[in-house]
Length: 85
Image 1 (cartoon, helix red, strand yellow):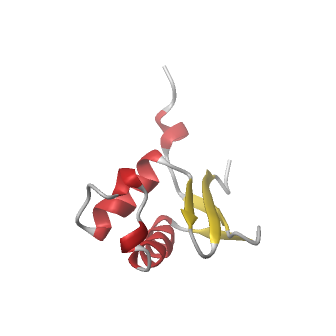
Image 2: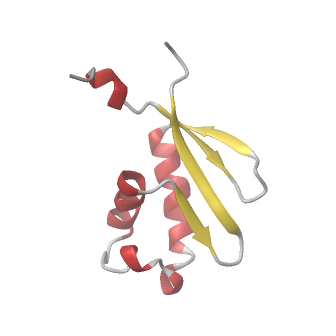
Image 3: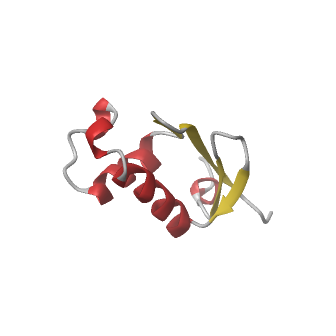
């Protein structure tokens, strides 16, 4: 049985469309995704269109995806990372 620690998410690395990386805490990732989604509500991916709240859209992205295509900016990617053993 897997150790629960394997599923503990304490940090993320986010890659911008220019491939610059930024280390983020979960609240910082939520804020970054919220800002991106707020500016593209009329161009949401199909799987996010069913959510009427921004917070629900962010939750869905964090739980089910690791990238977001923003039409005028490019693709944003994020991955869970552990900074400690």
